[in-house]
Length: 239
Image (cartoon, rainbow, N blue to C red; front, side, top):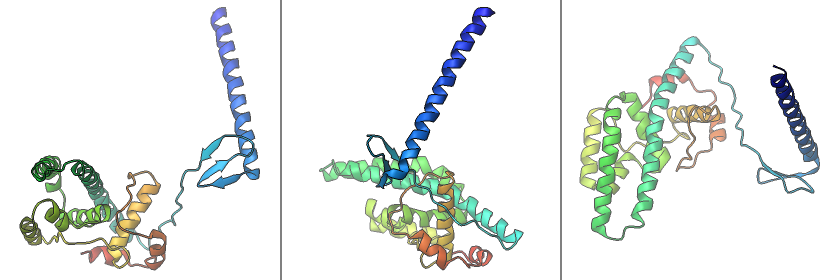
């Protein structure tokens, strides 16, 4: 028992010394910041070679709901956006991957074969999951695909298959009141801004993995434009 307690005391003393040294170094480092500079989101400490990267922090205005009903509507739509976003993000990643691979293939026949292989893989990966999506989630997904790839679903099908198949894809979608030509315009459509707002808040909280959009979006400028939107009316009249 004596030896155990003695070893414990030594270990505990070493641990304490280490923590004290760490706190001393930390306080010394931050005491120097006021005399140093910040360049490209990094703190450069004068007289040292230490460089600390500053994490980007986005501070968003807290949502104030006018009623319990409005709050229910918002979180109902919030869930729909969260169900659709991962597929749009993954599709964009696969598209970038496909384009990078095609740059290395010169033969038209091999390129066509590779595209077909990727299409089969995507269909196997997505089809059953997409069948379970609601109509609202499908509409959101079509918009988000435009956000993440810069192309409408119709254009994606047209580019990687054929115009004729794209036409039939769009015709079939229209039967279910879904247009594959839909674009994402948070600057002019309130429902699209609501989607963007949900994404930005989810990014800032770490709920969704952030992926840079392929279209230009100035979220903070748009926030001022849409700050007085009637959320219930916007969700009810979503297109």
